[in-house]
Structure formats: structure tokens, C-alpha cells
Image (cartoon, one colour):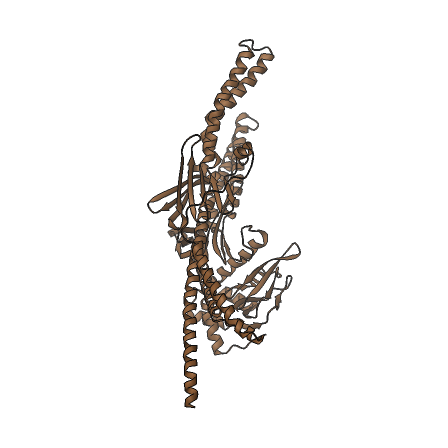
Amino acid sequence: MLAAMNNADYTQVIQFIKGLYLFVELEDQQIAEIATWFTPLQVPEGQRLYSPGDAGEYFYVIQRGSVAITRLIAGEEEDTDILEAGDFFGEAALLENRARSTSATTVTPATLLRLDSERFFRLLRDYPLVKANLERAAQTERIIRRRRFAWLGEDEVIYQIARKDEVILAFYLIIPVLLGISSLMLLFQATAVEPATVAWWGWLALASAFAAGAILWGIWSWIDWANDYYIVTDQRAVWIERVIFLYESREEAPLSTILAVNMRTSFLGRILGYGDVIVRTFTGQVAFRNVSDPRLMADAVEQYWHRAQERSEQEEAERMERAIRQHLGIGERQQRALLGSGGAAAESAARERGSGGAAAESAARAVGPQSPEEPPPAAGAGFFDRLFGDLFTVRIEEGDTITYRKYWTVLVRKVWIPSLGILGAAAMMVAYGIFYFLGYISFPSPLITLPGGFLLILGLLPWWLYQYIDWRNDIYQVTDRHIFDIERRPLGTEVRKSAPLESILSLEHRRVGLLGYLLNYGNVTINVGETRFVFVGVFDPARAQQDIFNRMHALRRRKQEAEAARERERIAEAITMYHRNVEDIRQRRSPFDSGLG
């Protein structure tokens, strides 16, 4: 299991750990020293490295192969993450001086670099930047153990979770602290007056109100700070913003769409060690704001981004190899020969070549120009259900189509006048009836007043219904290829605008006003050439923007895959033709060579 490290292995270890973000800030001489501390291990598939309850003795880095990390939840093994080359594990138990809470098992034969506890703590002592990275990894493990993220994919692995720096929490707590100080001052003022007097009770009540406000505001600020997460997985970079009791919003960027990772710090941020990490994509950006050690976070995002690129290139190379083998009939021809049906192999290979070309052509047609889709027809339902069945549903996902309505606050602005009139008329009718039958009112007669109230309500109801239908008919839609802005006036005209996803140049969202921030609604602006689409007043505009971005990314991937399939077919055909020509030349030369013999 243990492997001696010769000079070649030592050089490989240096080059390997130099590429890890854990050590990216270190000098070559420091990396060369650290490389001597690691012990290489050759571990077979299925080998258990440690189990829950074991002492934390070693820290591991995966040089080759893959390892499964499984957590115990409610006494059962669940939530398995598959770590690959470049990942590390085992640091949490060492940093927290506790027993293992997970198990680690090799999935494939693996080469691991192991560091014992003595050298691990020496690494922490001598290299503070490495310590900061490992502590963030341990913090990530703690958060994963106590919080579940429902949006994670089945095989998705969380690598990094960060929060805003604790200095930002201190800024959030300034006002609660000032309120607390004010409450003490007011309490002191109460001691200066005679007890149990009106003034004494007034000062005491005011001091209590300030103290309660300080406590509640402080708790809310802490929870609000703790609920914002910046997450990097093996597939995407994610920002989760949660406002307690109000909403949770998520912005994300698939790693494959990242164009650049930038860092931005203020003067105060450089002094206190916090800043912003900006992940830029082809349609916008995801900002990790006010994180601790932003340089380390940026290095982590860059490493996982480049790893995703390498994985994509490797997968494309494997697809290319399969396409070439398919065209040449390698593998199946040999199998047919073993079965004594070599002639059938050529026919089978030809069929496979034909089906491969047809697949590429089909993929090309799948992303070719198409006319804008019509919205899906409404499911059969009664009139009342169609009109009011999903009154408060502002995001509807049906098949490939996502439909957004304007938030209900927009509806309130439209119907508040007729609603106030209807409620006022109804209240007046009820009050009049009560007072009349109790004898407080004798004129006019209910036969005049109550029908008048009913007529007023009946006159206001069409106005209310018109405004409601007008709100309901203004919708925005995103399909797998287009966006739509549909405005339909009741008993009037319909205006429908559409644009293909591939023509979108940029996306941005903005919450408008204090109410927009509190209730999480706002506008999503989509720039398409010289045209601008604005999804006005949609709930969770960050998610709406993300929906559009995801559809754009999926369409872009489909086009790229179709283009790659065509390119693979072209190269495979060229190699097949070359192979046939070489074979033909060899067969033509063979009789001549035999004659010379």
C-alpha cells in the first residue's frame, strides 16, 4: 500500500500540488519542502480508509483515482460525495480534534498523498494561507452536516461554502448596539426621577422599547448574515440570499459558462481581509460579496472552473475515440470474427456509420431555426378554476415552458380603488342594516338603501374584474428556445413580442423600492440587439433571470454538441477514408512484393 517516492515521483508530486489552490500562494521552495512531508499510497478499489468513530490521524490528497465520502445521517449511510484527483479530505476531524463523522472508500484504484497529524499541524503553523483554506473546507463540512440544499443534483459535490466576513456582521450590529446603549442611557435617566411616577414609568417604557428593539434587531441581523451562502460545487458557482420570513433567492453560474474570475476589494477590505469575488459569464455575473480572504476563494473557483474545462475536453476526446472506432468497426469486428461471422462485421460497421451520421444530422436539426412556439394550451377546467384557480401562483412551469405573472402587489395597485369601493359599500350596508333593525336609524328605508348598495357593488365588480383579468393576461414566458412578452387587454388588442434565446446579449435584474427588496420582486431586463425586453414586477427576479440563463446555456450546449457531433463525424470519415486508402495501397503492393520475393 505504501510506495517509496523516487526522484521522478517527487517531481510529479511537486508539479501536482503546485496546481492545487491550497498551495497556490506558496513559493516553489516552500512547495518542494511540503512535497517531502507527504507519503504516497497506492490503494486498490474498494479499500476503506476510515469509518465514522475512527480517530482523525491523517489528511489525504487524491493524486489519481476517486474516493467516496459518505456521511452518517440518523444512523444510516447517506449523502455520498465522489471526490476526484485534486480533491482533499480528512481535514475536519484533525482541525476540530474529534472522531471521524464520515467514511472514505476508494471507488477506483487510487494514488493518495497522505499527511500524518504531526506534519499536518506543522503545515498549519508554518503556512497561514494553507490553514485558511483548510479551515474554510472544515467550515463547509460543518454546514453540510447540519443543512440540506434541496437544489443540489444527485451526483453534485459541494467543494466550498463561504459566508460574508464576520466584519460585515459587526457592521450589521452597529445599530442594535447603539440602540442598546441608548436603552441604558434612558434607564439611567429613569433613576434620576422619583420612582413610580408618570415620568419614571415613561422613561422605563422607552428604555424597554429600545432594549427590545436592540435585541430583536441584533438577532435578525445575525440570522440574515448567517443565511447568505456562497457555494462552489463541481458543476456551478451559487449565491444563496435568504431573508428570514420573506424569501430565498438563488443566483448561479455553471462552471462551463465562466469566462473570468475577478477579485475586487476596497481600502477597508484590504485592511480587514475581505472583498468581492466576481464570477463573470457570457450573460452576466455572480458576485460573492464581502467574503473572507477573497483571493483564496477566487483561486478555488478558478481551479474548479479549469477542472470542469479539462473534464469536458477529456469527455470530448473519449467521444471522438468512440466515433473513430465505430467508423473503423474496431471492437465489434473482432468480436464477430471470434464468432465466425467476420463478413457481417463490415455490414454492421457500415450501419453504425450511417446511424452515427444520422444522429449528427438529427442533432443539427434539433437546434436549427424554428418558429416561436405557441404557449401550451390550458388544461380542461371550469371557468372559475381557469380564472381564479391559481390566483396567487406567479410562476408556472409546464413542460419546457415557464410562465411568469406580475407579482400580486401589481394586482393590488390595479384593483385597490374598486376593491375599496366594494368593501366600503358592503360595510355600509351591513352597518346600516344593524343600526336600522336596532332602531337607531329610521330613514331612509332599507328597501331603498340596500338595493342601492347592491347596485353600487354590481357596478364596481366589472371594473374590478377587468383590472384582474388585465393583470392575469400580462404574462412573460421562457421556452427552450424563445422568450415571450404577452400583453392582452380584456376585450381589446393583444401584443406579443418574442425573441430567440441565442440573440440575447445581456441579462440583469433589479428590485425596485423598499417593498421590492422586502417582498423580493422586481424587473428583469433582457437586451436583444437593439430591442429591450423587460419582465416587469416578477417575483424573485434573480430566479427568473437564472431561468433564462439556464435555458440559454442549455440551448448553447445543444448547439455546441451538435456542432461537435458533426465535427466528429467529419474527422472520423476522413480517418476512415485514410485507413481504407492505406489498406488498399497495402493490398495492391502485396502481390508485387510477393513477386519480388
